[in-house]
Image (cartoon, rainbow, N blue to C red; front, side):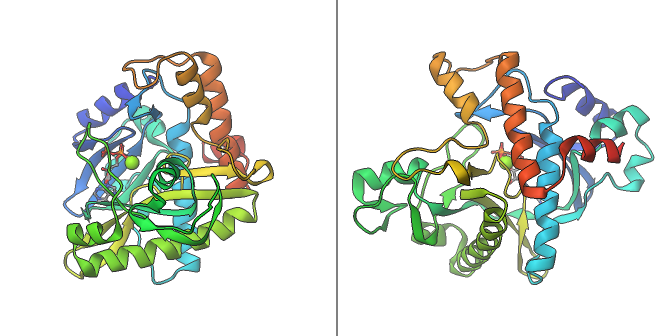
Length: 315
Ligand code: ATP
Ligand code: MG
């Protein structure tokens, strides 16, 4: 597998799987009209640009972390439906893949229900940071919602806040919007449902992570629609360092920006080197190593499993 996983994904196509989409991080193939193979590569993006090289095992890590959460929600939120069918390549497809390709896909795939994705990024914020902090400093609002006076950077909000954004086309930037604007995009019924489910999932995850020393400052969900039953279903990756801001709880300090578990090291390096937002940047070995370490740390704290053992035991 090369750093971006290109070679193996080309191979998958040679085995007759049709590619449906290629995101910044994932390659998505059609299994049958009702389901998809959701493959996380080792690609990493920062400031909306994909780096030239990848972070080894990142795709597997993101996949297993999502699967961990999906399984937890099955137990804790029985009325929540998710797109996960299984955490492996379906047998019908696996049998037609070479051993090499099967091995490459191992740990980084989910077999998921194919759904109509509702065009909103459903963000929940438990703490004020990032673009929400920037907006608050300017106007005292967050996604247009009036906020109490005197909040400090990284402060915990009294209640988690649902702050949707648009789901931009490839190459465009998502835009923060108010809940009212979200209602205009997907309709009141679905907007309400998405808000309710997002807040419920966030609160369960926040409490779970807090017991393990991690603050989930904010996170982004996506939802799909089962057009036959009209049900709103949790899709995509969930609560990974790519879709969330994870902060180590023991380093939390009010009134400043926090070092997070995810891409902070990479972002800081890009900024320092004047490479922020540039195309085709190759990360140094040290940056790759440090980033991989951060992702692994988050995985191990959240799941209580040792990464090396997870990889070994699945071989
Ligand atoms: P973009 O798609 O804008 O590049 P991204 O970089 O986050 O965003 P990836 O994470 O690489 O994309 O790919 C995941 C894509 O698959 C997202 O566009 C997401 O909306 C879509 N998706 C997630 N779950 C499902 C599902 N169950 N059915 C259909 N599409 C899905
Ligand atoms: Mg994504």
